[in-house]
Image 1 (cartoon, rainbow, N blue to C red):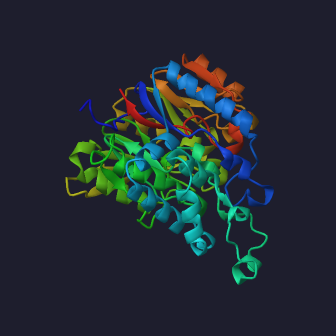
Image 2: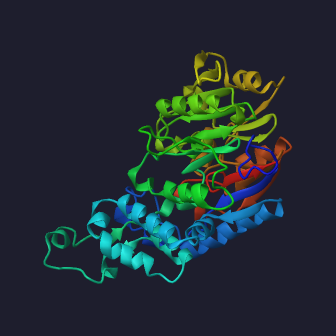
Image 3: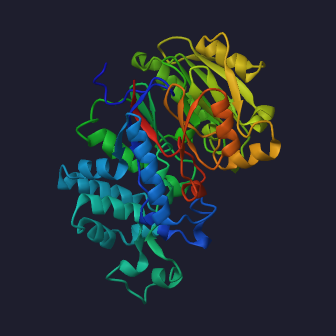
Length: 409
């Protein structure tokens, strides 16, 4: 079991391997008129964002985690053969919309002519501008209609939130269908890595796939224990997707999953994923946003047998009781994001105060800007490691959002 390339049976076991993406030129391709489309509220300053991200990565390393970068694993995967690289480029262009499809031949030429696989991968992330096309026919209808467009291949600025495109569960992954069209291409990198990289190919079960019609994202999947998960019914994840995930997990005896607690949370941008309002910091300590509790409905999905069949019951009791039941705890502590101050709670939840990343039991990485929440965590005896967040936080995601654990003890 120790040689499993994916091994995630909790939110809190010592983090041993983790996947990150260092923000790149895709952030410099954000412009004010594209912010809504690309799911940003502001434009981060790239140099500072990279410095903050490097400090975040250093925190993970100092606490015993080996850091892998999405761009490096993708480049290593494609370097195995020209045919694999060509197939990646073809699939990427096909997934990039009609403007990219119209210029498929020249885009393929541009991408395959780059001097290294790493540059190719980074270019797909950063995007290709219209002015980079060498054979533009200015008299054509397409060019006249889209003459105000900047990109023939749109940038993917959300990539530094590696939590969402796929989620590690037990020994396998949920390869997700993203809620927004603008994020659909993010799953391509993970699919090629997990299917073709020598470290992972043939060894990782897929419990979900983006060809399925229901959206689900990694921020809505929390692995509470070997036998229990939490899943958010949110702005980005549908109940249908959670049912499919439950059936597939329950069919695989190796997954160990027997129970899923489904959190039905308000469908608003501030609470876009479950992990923006609820995360685990220790065996018996959880961070929650108090406003979420007022509207929360809980459902318990329980495995019936190895066919994938399950029962669903609604929890009318409080969250604390549901967690105690599922985890077999006599008692636990819910720590409020922002404390008991309503204004501070709302402000710090917006700045990802509840989005903590547990590095080992009782040790959490947090954004430095959430002073009240961070002090509350310390008051409850947690080891709080603050990371800088002036620019990274502009993307609306915290330390958990920016990391995809691959192995925990």
